[in-house]
Image (cartoon, rainbow over all chains, first blue to last red):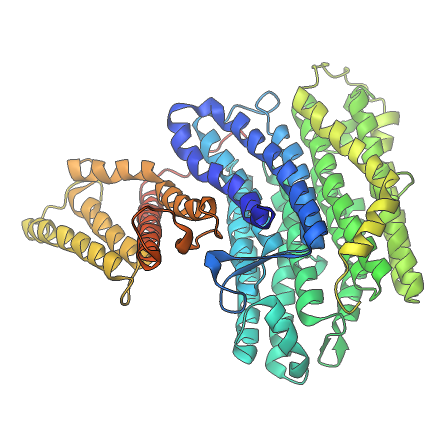
Length: 489
Length: 149
């Protein structure tokens, strides 16, 4: 039974997603409870899968019973299982947040909406487990198509942002596919494990180098690595407030996971492209992204856009961590990735709630709260502490391990980049806090509405999670060190 | 084309061609296991026949209304596909491992045959419905409205 768990984990959201259009003809109101139920079912299944993987080793799931190099394979190893646990937990909280109490009623569009959300979750699960490069592409595209539609759902400006996302995202996916094509032409295989065995003989090949670069640029667009991030701020700012948390916390992170999988499990940690070590290249780009993202966040006036740029800087930090070339840095990067999924979700919950409860969109308007957002501000502070990196939150320990790894690798550039990014993060949150807590504008205080349960759950769960991640960081990091470190690192 | 095409020649030819195209789609679907073809191609051919239907007879005609009704079948194809795969899973094998499709009275090759055929039917239905919904939403649906989300 254990060996089927990866497939079951994928089939749960997929199965409901394809049944919803039929259920929705008669019972529109069932969409939400059913979706929450399926995500809640995914949590124990993903934990069972993790336990099964720990006990029996990596699960290789051959679809249709065809063995690996010929057939389609899913690989559930330690890292993938940890990722799916995080995915299902964050997904559950995000889907709870899609409440109609806070947001306008969707009417008949609630059925396609929940279908898209569930398909997004299913395809992200597929991306995490995918054992060959082409499968990764397929799920990348499915998740991206769902994300385009969810961004454009609001119409108007969101439609333009969604269209831009579609053009750039498709461009990225095409580049990735082109890169996969080059590798396939060189090796005749798409299976990751099979490919990894043939890569060492290809170091001198130009087609291999071009293929790797195409794949990197393609996934770079998908994960919004800084020079390629053009689609992200608009898409996350204008996306419906109820879906931004899900997009921000999951979609770019899983694309980044895809690159981690390719870089370490296929190309190998020592991969060289045109005499440049791939890890060095990724590290420099990551440091750049960390600095530029945080710097751009500092100059934003819209809250959601500021958080979106903050997310860009964190993608950079994760890349800095994984590219240090030692286990400490890699584990720090992965740990930071898990943290970042939680923090981004929390921040966008807060931004969405502020917009819909108090009508506050920009930092200027925050003064209108007059400190009146109650404990929602407390949740913001907790998550912001983690974003900045102050103990005992998860963000601190993520950065701590990244810096430890950098010291170990004697990569002082990385240390400086992480520290400056931290200072810039502190700066833009101070700017935010200044408005929330100190600014007393002359406008009348906001109408105090009761905070909906969905917001309480969302903000409560994420702010507790960052503290738990921080307190448990020692266990999680040693667990990752034991189970999720790529070979040859 | 929101109303019926006015040329009698086009109408008569379509009356002849549409069933032929659909018959050919079925042939491709069932022949797909032995030669070129299969679910995807069959679905596309079926879609073209339906597109021809509402291009020639218009969406308001009985035939056109039938095409619009098909749209509710969104997902039925996938349900068939995932259902077959799920039955294999229940039978103790991997997802889509047709050898484990527990149908009494069938030996392993016959099980594989049935499994592939059923899965291909699912694919064909899904491709056909998706094709129709793309054409309908590009050609007829009003996209100018703005929603409050």
